[in-house]
Length: 257
Ligand code: BG6
Image 1: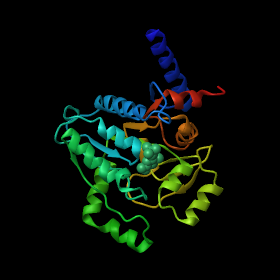
Image 2: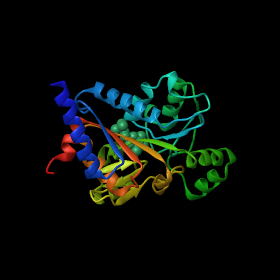
Image 3: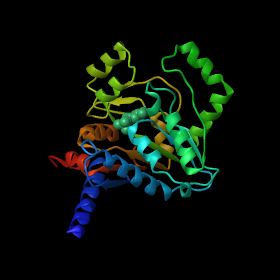
């Protein structure tokens, strides 16, 4: 029976991979919408597959969110060398402190014995403020580190959930609703066709940068994220992406195929 289940998961991984056009798909058993421990399993699977592509001086750019926080929880000192570096992928995008990439990078560094850098950018800045922040040498240095990352690790969120969870302005909320966004990642909101309908203005990694990153790991589970996952991969460069998801999301993704 166990063998059958494993075979079943392998078949699903290939079907989801073909559907999304990503490099690789890993599916953990269960449904993280219903069972919180499944998110920990996603974290464990993410750590395991990332470990295969880290070397001494690898830079990993990371986003925020509860799933990334679960990945952080699974890191151990044997993951990295002390010269490895975790950096936030993008500046402030309106998350609560425990969900912020800065905090998650600090935890990842602490748990794995590696280093981390922070990127402090206020959430809603004027154009003038934004331009002067970009000239700040310390910010500039972190920006350089982000663009030389060989691994990007990120979450994918349901658009409405993310817009509500962040302190999104009325005006932006309207744009997101009217644009019928279903998915979100890196502060970009996508509709079902993968079209970007809104983008949170902040510094750091831009979506197009993903095309030149050798290893991108997307971690997102639960049937409630199936549409989000699909919209994201329609809109974002994804040929070097590995999706780490759960059975719940995978089954929903494969419905009607
Ligand atoms: C955010 C990321 O912090 O987490 C988003 O910036 C992502 O891009 C979201 O969509 C996912 O959150 P969670 O809690 O569902 O893992």
